[in-house]
Image 1: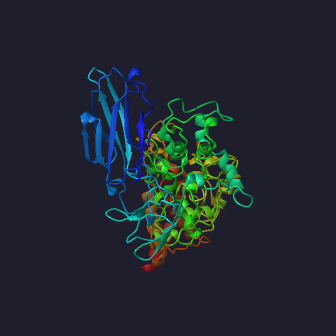
Image 2: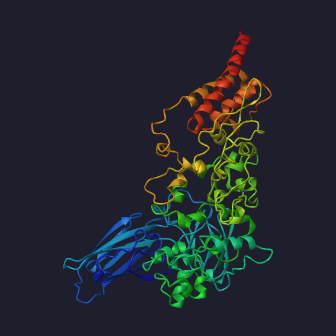
Image 3: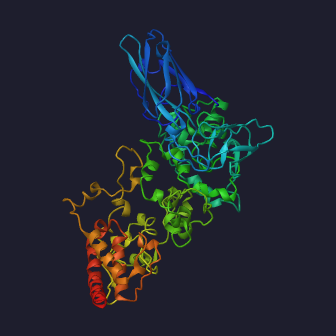
Length: 616
């Protein structure tokens, strides 16, 4: 494993747990710690050394303790704590659960990152604390194009290295643990697993990857989007000054550990990324200069540009490009709780498992709401990223709601939240002056609005929320109710923004609607309702009336049942299902849900009486 050392005056390799502590000025830089910045490897040994650099200060001693991360093995100190040795955590401890086939995605949360605290006392009453972070593995997007000098872990069994670039000396590291490989030269590395399934890794350096995506006939609009993107300009704005910036946002103590997410490349490996090129040019990466003073080669790698998400080297073959839709691509920066908990919060949602059922990935209308590629195709974003049948489920990922390429959002310039065209039911509602829908709800509505042309309603939250979608069983006329929550500022996320309290950022990606989100408007607790039980009783009665053909799977829309909305009984069933298909019906619009059930009840009761009489 490539090992590089760094003098740590604050923080360490990644994570930025705390800002620089400006304690006693005379002792602020007396303690220097030399620790690995490159990943040390799972269950591989590492060492740390420290020294006191201020004249007239006693050497004292250092007490070490682990304060975060998976438990380290064999952690020991020597020389009054000025020497530390240990062994990185095991792979299974850092990355629990089954692994996807191919390149294993690794985020700050799953890279085996641990934080050690050093407490130095000089014997004269002075004390200083330092935090040091050690990581076992580099981050990985899960894509098949990767950086040289960066270890790649592989999910699957029986891997063999079939071919490497000329003069490469790369070899596979085999179990215990998953197989892994460090590409040492640019080019293709062809591997095969025990079943003969092939994987081609394309390796290269970040600084050697051509940034000509904006050529005529290629990605001109995407390149223009990237130039204006907050991610692309984050480092330039922070180091300032640039046009539109009021000055350096990061300040003189900008932590170099943030470069892992504010620039391209990893910290430590010789991958041609920002910190690697800075090291080659003699620029202190942990204290970058002002933006305009950086060498052009570094400005090219500053910010989160195309390569930060898509990786270096050539793009994967078309059959592998679907993997860029996985949340793992964003997780390399946004899965670092408690500071960045977007992915951790998302994983607790139903969206994270939306395509777990194989039926949800079918072409029978399910994929548009249960898969990321299906949603993008259905909403007109793109239709060329469908995963192969054998791919693992990935859920509804970041790419479904967020468009890094701003021109794809369908919203106003600069918007990063997708704004697809409204479904037909919503298109009809938005023309109603009595109902104002916050535009930020647009990305939610395609999957949470029933299709009036479908044989059964599904995912009916928006219909209940806006008081639309039902029918009077007797006349067939639309049942229209009030939209009591339609004016909530922020739309859906006005209420669906709850999440784990321990997360500093991204907790709202749990999308939970908690009592706390209701309290600003509802001064008294909202009483529970019996709507769900009442709807279930009506549905059970309807099934008995309709006969054996009406029984099916749960949810009803996933089965083969078809309703005849040309009959009062069919329209009554539709109204009942609108309530059943929305688990939050009582919170979204209890009054409209009661109206739907009240309208359906007489038609179902009459049919039950008639069938009962016929059976006698």
